[in-house]
Length: 72
Image (cartoon, rainbow, N blue to C red; front, side, top):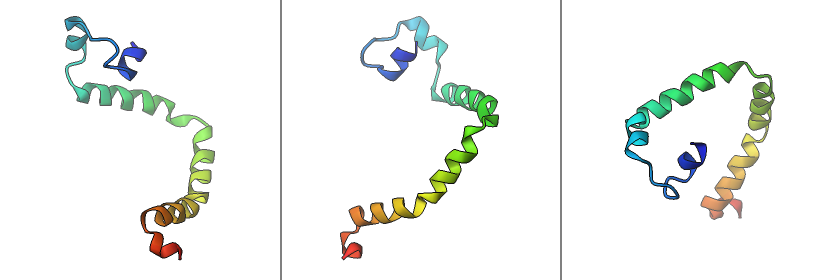
C-alpha cells in the first residue's frame, strides 16, 4: 500500500481501494492521528533548535537566489 501511495501512476487502484479512500480529508486525518501519537519523541526539540539556528543562513541563501541585487 505505501508504494502505491508514493507512486499513484505506477499502479492503477482497483474500485475497492478507491472506496476505502473517499477523499484527501481522510488521509490528512490519518496523518494527524499518527503524528499526535509520535509528538512525544525526544529528537524533535533538537531538530527545532538546529532549524532555528540555521534560519538566518537559510534566509540569506534564499534571498541571494531570489533577489541577487541584495547580495551585491
